Length: 218
Image (cartoon, rainbow, N blue to C red; front, side, top):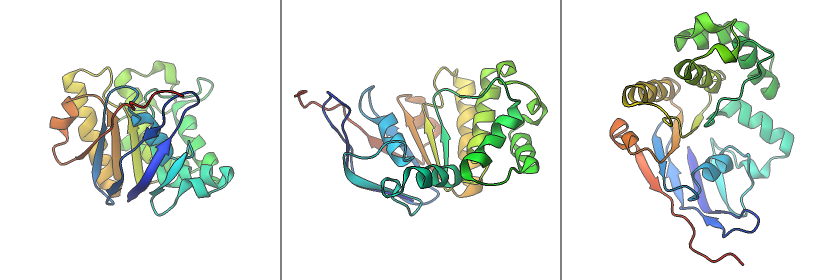
């Protein structure tokens, strides 16, 4: 579950982003919609504890990330939040499987090689485990990113523009995979997007519209 109240964030020299209050029940799907600059990625970063609110609070999976120390926040995020960034950041020095293994290090847990293999197999990319990230196609990279996000069975999955640069068929396939993965975990799924196709692909999702701030910069 995710709940926010009076949430705001101000970047240096910019008008503050004042984000709508929201309550998202466990296992449901939320679409964050809005033009560039409206705060979609910022909302995700606040929910993941990557940013600290300027005002208000956001509680995610029973925790207020801003109230944790930096190290505790990192460990909490690794264990409870699956994050799908716009661009997949993997080390070319490591194999695909070893990149996923870093999730355990971030969470302060012993590496589970069998779980890594199961996660990749479940998403149809198990045969790529020993390959390098540069060998992945766009579609394969998305599946690897999703395998990494769900590896520790998170309570919340946050996805930032997951359909960007995908054609219609790939978009529909990617959304089915993402929704099914969240459903298997009973995880709350939040997708930040400007892609109108997702409204049709995810008819059951609640939509939260964000607006670009109109206040003048001081």
